[in-house]
Length: 161
View 1 (cartoon, helix red, strand yellow):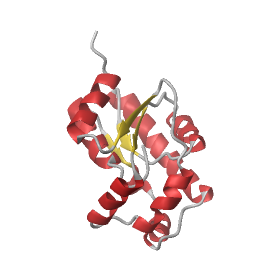
View 2 (cartoon, rainbow, N blue to C red):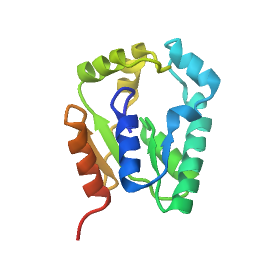
View 3 (cartoon, rainbow, N blue to C red):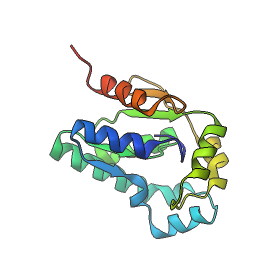
């Protein structure tokens, strides 16, 4: 989880592959209307987000019950959003928070092509972000090597005995 451009999709997809777990790209579950708003540089409201978060959580819970685990890339910027995901999944959720400097993330957003998220929304995402805390959270800096973040995430999720 984290703001747009933090590397959520890359990490989650790679982590899911390494765990032989299903992967959910939460962006794919946004309504067409939400995608159009974001493309136009209009920040989503909580009313826009609730159905999306419910859909992400339901899919995450269904896949995790069927497959034993599942991995999702989802912004989940506020605590209330994470609570909504948890309620919809009806299972415990662990979060890997990808954070970093605005400059690094903005550069990543400018460099990617074909994504509906308008880079002008980065500041509103940063303002909305409530960094998660607790035993169910691993925080990583996006300036770290992606492979190092992946290895840290795997070790945290599957500790060796």
